[in-house]
Length: 284
Image (cartoon, rainbow, N blue to C red; front, side, top):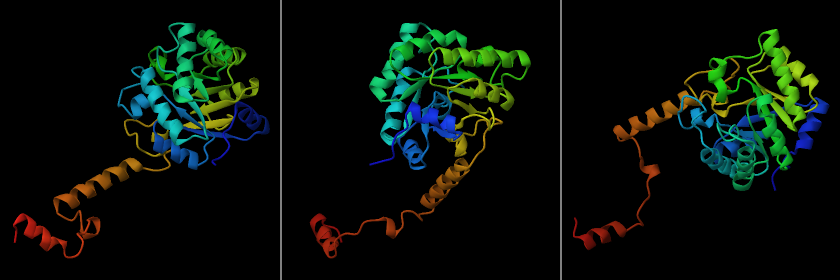
C-alpha cells in the first residue's frame, strides 16, 4: 500500500499550519512514478506538455484528448498522489456548459482529483459551475500562457500598482466563485504575499516568490531537459539534457566502432548445440 493521497482539506490545513506544499508537472507514467516516490504533494498534468512533449511554440494547440491521454498515464504512475488536470485552450472559454462537460471528462476518463483553468473574473462563471457540479477547481492568474497574446508575450505580470490591484481583485473573485486553491504565475513576491494573506484558500507560486503557500515547477525545467528557453524563475536541479545527449553519443560511437554489444550483452547457445546446428543447416 502506498502513501495516503492528500485531500483538499489536507492542503487547506497545510496553509493554516504554514507548511509548504510541493508540486511538479508530469506528463507520463514514469515521471509521475518518480514524483510519487519523491513524495510530491501534488502533480499537475499541465498544458505545458504542448511545449515539453510535442514541441509546440506555446500551449494554445493542445487539445482535450491530448491532456486526458497524458492524465491517464500520470494517474497510473502516481495512484496515491493528488493530480490536477489542466484545462486546455477553448475547453472552457466557449461556454459554461462546455467547461463543466470538459472538466467532467478529466474526472471520468482520467481519474484526476481536480482541474485547473486560467483567468480571473472572466472565468468565474465557469469556476462556479464546475464547483457546483461537485468538482474541485484551481484558479490560475498572473502570466496565463493561453492568453499570452493579450499579455504581450510571456512576461511577468502585476509589476505596477494598477495591474497588481487587478490581480488581487481577480484572486478574490476566484475564491468567491468556489475555487479550492489558486496558482499565481510570474508575479512579484510582494503581490503574491498580499494575495496569500487576503485569501483563505491556498495560494501557490510558479515564479511568484517564496512567500506563497507552496511551489510548482515544470519537471522538464527541474531536470534540465527543456532547452528552448529558461524562465527567470527556474532553478535547474539537474542537467539531464546534456547527459542524455552524451549517453546517446557514446552509444552511437560504440556501435559504429563495434564495441557494443560486447560478449556480456549477448546470449550463449547451450554448450554443444552449435555443432548440431551447423550439421542441420549444412554449414562448416
